[in-house]
Figure 1: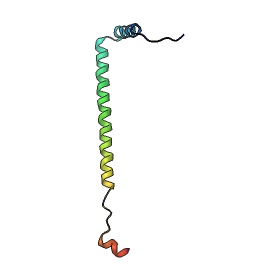
Figure 2: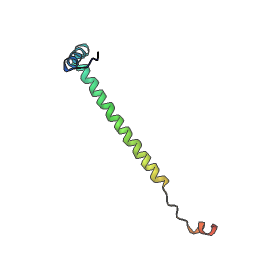
Figure 3: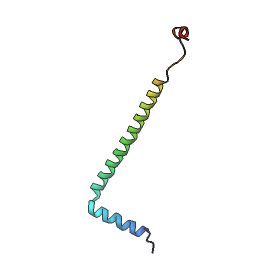
Figure 4: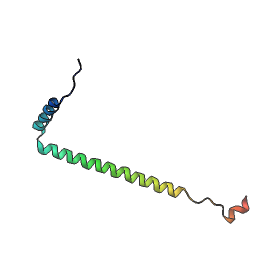
Length: 72
């Protein structure tokens, strides 16, 4: 026998969570979760920017100069 979550079961779980934790605590948790997601996205963007800067720095001009032509 397979049990599936219907709308009434989800509503019952939501009511129980709301009664146990209260509306204020749940909204605080959601606010903290939003701040965490924002910080994560900012960290990913900063890391990508640093990688791009490192890639640009290492991709320098390798055209031989007159000093190097004499050695070849």
